[in-house]
Length: 84
Image (cartoon, rainbow, N blue to C red; front, side, top):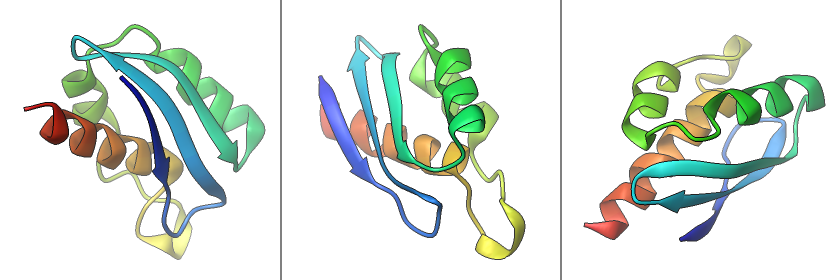
């Protein structure tokens, strides 16, 4: 399933991704620090969503209380909950 998630309190404005049988594919951050977001997207390609969530949840970016990786974890949690 292809998803688009509107991020909160980050430099990126949204995250697009596909979730197929619990596996993450084609992650694309809209905005944000291009090198960092492309790196995160590349690293999580083909990973199980639960593993991505475990690794990225609660990562903080400065004073924001969240980060682009944390927002990806939140987006994946929501997508998994919707698929149940």
